[in-house]
Image: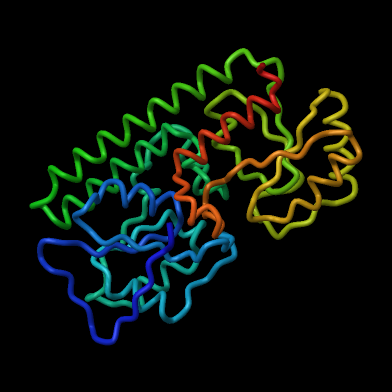
Length: 289
C-alpha cells in the first residue's frame, strides 16, 4: 500500500458529508483509517521509512494540516512540532485531536507524558485510542457517527482478541526479560504483559550507550541465559549485532510500530499484523515453546 500524494493548488474545503483527516504516526493513521471506512480521506504525514521521533514537517505538510478538518496526533512529547503548527493554522485550522488526552486518568497511561509515547504497544490502550478517535470523528461529522462507532467497535474487538492472545500466550513463558539493542520503546508492552524490558539506552533513538551500559546489558544476557537480542527496523541494528556477537545470541526484529518501511507499505502491512509478528518474536526470545 502506497501513501497517497496530492498537490493542492487552491484552498480546499471538505464537503459537508466527508471528512479530511491528517494523522501524525502510523498507528493513529491505521486506527483512523479503519474507523473512517469510506466516509473520510485519511492521510499520514510520515513518509515511508521515516523515524517518528526525529521527523519534522515540511511546509507542504503544514499546508495539508491547515486544510484538513481534523489533525490527529499523540502528544507534544511524541510530536514536539505539533503545538506550534496548530497555532500557526489559526482559528480556521483543523480540529486538533491529541489522542493522549483520551487516556487521561487511565492507570499507567501517564507514562505517555513521561517520555514513553509508544502506548499503542499496550493493546488495551490501543482500543481506547480507537474509541477516542471515533468520538472525535463523530462530533466532527454527526451524520456519519453510527458508521464510525460501528467500525470502531468491530476493530476494537479485533484488538481485544489480540490483546487476549498476548496475555495468554506470554503467561508462563520461562523467561520474563527481553533485551533491546536500541532505545527503550517497549515499556508499555512490558508493563501490560508482565515482562521486563532491558534496553541499551532511553527513549531517544539517536542516543549512544556508554561502554559501561553495553557491558551491563551483555552481562545481563549471560546471567539470564537469553538467546535473542531485539532490534528495531527503522533504527540501525549495529549495536544489537554487537551484543549478539558477544553472547552468541540471535538478532530478531521487534516493532515499535510508529511507522512502516517502504516494503511494508507495498505489502499492505497493518498495525495488527505488526503486533502479531511481535507476539511470535517475543515468544521466541522468552523461550515459550
